[in-house]
Image 1 (cartoon, rainbow, N blue to C red):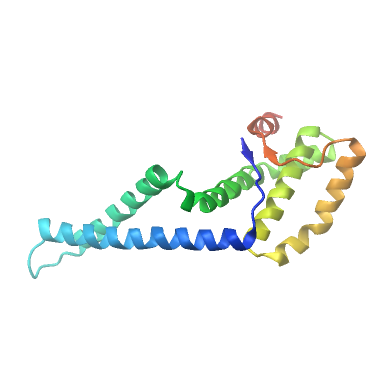
Image 2 (cartoon, helix red, strand yellow):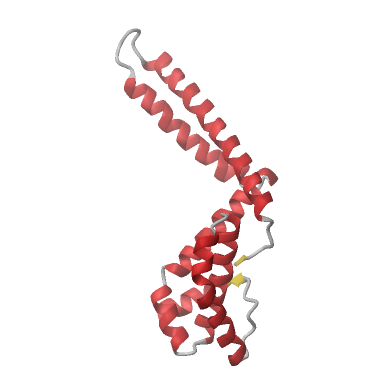
Amino acid sequence: MFELKPCDPVTYRQQTRRSTLIVAVLFLALAMLLSSLAVMLFGEPGGDNVRFNVGGVFAGVLVTVALVRGLFWNQPWLAAAVYGWQLKRSLMSVTNVMHTVTARVQADDPTAIKLLRFYHLGLTQMHALDANSSAQAQLAGEIQAHATKMQALGIDPEQTRLDPAWLERLKSA
């Protein structure tokens, strides 16, 4: 279950820039090291060693991904980037069933109404974190109308959690 957390957009952007720089430098070092190692072990002096260079870069990508997903994933310096990735994945999971969500919201389905509210809150946070105020301004009216509908139906507008069961319920409907 994913839950929205309060984040300062400026701090978030600083932390994600720093973690991106760390991962990029790690990748560059690994790619150069593995390419050089591949050429040294398997290449021909003065020959065409492009395939070994490309293989080293590809191995660098694989090792970098393995390190990020395995060793670094729970490190504090990567926490902001992990949260942003999880937020965007959660929003995408709702986007994938949005046609069903909007149809069920029109039918006053409480699950769809809660899901759409989570989507609006998550999208609002994502736009704030990414400093994308123009996209947020376009949705303001829709978000406010939906919050008003929730209050009229007696549904709590603070839907900061994405329950996977909501998605399953709508997929099977």
